[in-house]
Length: 206
Image (tube, rainbow, N blue to C red):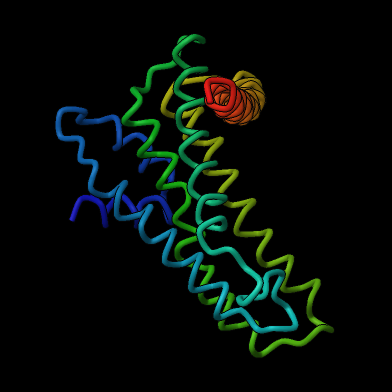
């Protein structure tokens, strides 16, 4: 029930929602986080199949569903981790669990409005493509505004400092991704090296 109350507050009174997330830290519950992440996955996959063909960016038969889910969930989790790391260094007042909770709740506009937009696309044609894209961007801009608000309110920052924190967080997100990709690439090359080395040793011993 508390999760639903927070969801309604986020849509109609986002500032109060973020303050409430910090009000009673001892009663923190991870279940809303899990539920919203699952809803994100369901909505994303459903939208790929629901969106009207002429307006769709992705065609279902040519889409890697797992990749699309990863492209949605990983940035959310990486943002939460990066935001916590940056705010901790720069005198922030939110805990990792609160940062994760607020980040995930900021994605609620996507959960609520993506499928209706997908259904609306069936009433639109190519002539309304720009309007349809604009509606999608409105949802993402809303999410961005909520993310900025959450950082400002939950860490008691000024607006100028909040913008700076957001920029640093974005850079940190890309650094994390770059470090991960570099690690994966080097690990793959290392495995290939040892595989070739072992093969040559076996051939030599024979």
